[in-house]
Figure (spheres, rainbow, N blue to C red):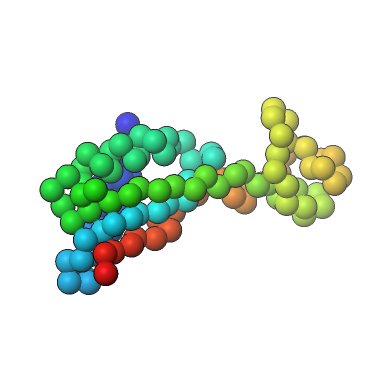
Length: 114
């Protein structure tokens, strides 16, 4: 479960931000998860709740937004959301392309209690 090591790093960053702000409690952590990122957001949320126990982030919300796959057609430079199973550009019909969104896993925000 590689989600655990990822969540550990997210928690470390959140706790560093808390420390830099006078140990204010973390109330929310938000991430963007690409549809192709190969992580399970629900597993990450579960892991966050488990490993944040006893820290300034205990009980914090762990929210995520899924980032859909977007592909750049290398023939006509159209950005499109591919269908399954073949990725065809809706403008020129070319197959394939380069993924421009959907692989990311980004810590979007850490919210502290006022």
